[in-house]
Image (cartoon, rainbow, N blue to C red; front, side, top):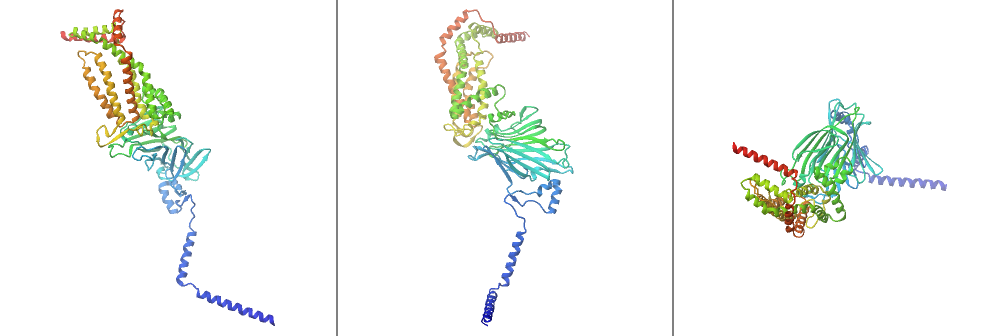
Length: 627
């Protein structure tokens, strides 16, 4: 009985608890507005959960709508397939090594940025790394013609990137797909510590889609950025260079120019100290090359120097394209380019003929050795001293010849007075005097002519010496550019808006050098009848040469001005030593008198020929008088 009572009490307790819970739930029942709000939230969450998930590396740019795909197919044909594939979230794929950073655009598959890690700009953006490609200044496009008469441009279509690594090499495959196994591929291979990368272009399974009866045009263009302090100086050495017809190299003019070339194996868009090169192992049959000068006004045109374009035909073989090529983005360094053994050393202008030989086999090895041991400013000075010392025997012979002519001057003057009315006789007697005295009047000119190629070679060597870039000396912060010590508030035509100090010093040195040499020549060379007054010409040159030096070199690299200053300074010193301590006028006079007593030397070929010419001229003159 007691147990039943307990069960009844338990039931009553449960009923009471249940009733209390129901009352609490009723009191906390949500309002209709709260119910509606919750329903909307659930609907939003449900719709979000049904959207496709996006990974961290893939963006939802693929076109999946059938209507959109059909629309794309009307313009891209089978290549509309490429628009249905996922693309990288960023628009670029980056590869880099110790020397260069390259950003390749997924759209177009071309190099959109090329940054050199070890070089900085010296122009108004001084301090920033040199970028050969940035902000769409360059492009690469292959024009494809389909069998259904469409013209497609690869620059407008998306490539699928795949980046892998084989050993230390980075391999980037960019595929423009027309189907799972139908594609056009750009393959970039970047090696460690190298500015040259492999670039292969090949197609697979496209023979059924493309019109392969004529080549597809690869169009490469670039607007070269200004990187140096003087845009005019930089633009002077900025040019398009190419190799064609089995090793011939050529270039387009500095002004606007275009050329059609056959069997092209490389095209270089040079920017003075830097260059962009496309090379191929399969020559391009007929290529169109264009260069345009963008610097019309140096005050306004301050960003770009030249605009380049190359249209290169890619031939089909069995319906497919397959080209093994290379890109080079880096310094115009002779040693680096020459090491590739692909004739790229011609891109660095060292001069033609004997000037190039002097630079390649004398200047470059010697200066390279000195630059590896001492700072470049001091290396230029030591380099100049060694060159001038090596040339001092020639300087000595030239000065000795002038001294001999100076000793003979009184006798030549006497002949001029004696045979003044008979030019032919005067010339014959003068030549006899030279022959008796053992003096060659041309001996003073020959040494000067021997030295001339070395001087001309220096004009090519120093502007091409990238080693001087970003290297300072004394007040010059960069030996590859001008050494401005004063900014002018105005622009002087042909001079500029600044004052460079090394050209001033070089001009002063050349003034005194010219004064010394021309003074002795004027004294040694008597005035000849019917000939221009050399004394007046020499006096004019005394002032014209330094002024020309001052104007020309004001915007040139200070390394070249330093070389010329030291060169003229040393030459002056050598001549003073020769004049005061080596050449003795009394001894020369005695030697000449002794030579006169000896049997006259046989006339040289030049003297004999000169005499024959003069005799013929005199005979013709006599005939004219009779008429």
